[in-house]
Image (cartoon, rainbow, N blue to C red):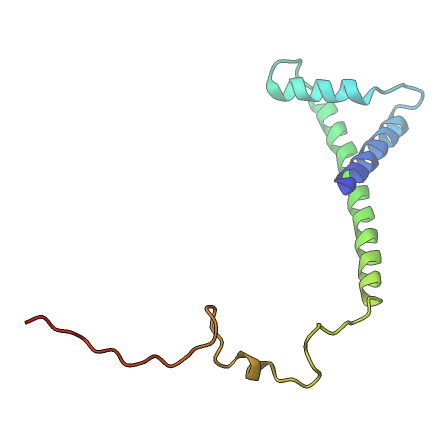
Length: 124
C-alpha cells in the first residue's frame, strides 16, 4: 500500500514536471486532465486531438521510465541489504543431522506401524 502511494506520487510529480517543461508559465490542473482523459475514454467527452494524444503518451512514457528507474534503485538497495542478513540455523536441528534419517517411516498421519493380518470372512 505504501509503495503504491509512493510510486503514484512520483508519477504525478514527474508528469507535472514534464508538463511544466513543455508549457512554461502555464498552470496545469492534473485533476482536470484526469477528468478529461476519463470522459474521453468513456466516449462521453470531447475527442482528444492526435497531437495531444502523442504529447500525453510521451509525458506518461517519461514518467513511467522515471518510476522504473526508481524501482531499480529500491531493488538494488534491498538486494544489498539481503546480503548482510545473518544466516541463522533452524531450531531443533543438530549440525550434521541427516535429514533423510528423520524422514524414514514418516507419513502425514503419523508413524507407520505394521498391521495385524486380517481374516476375510466369506459368506457362501
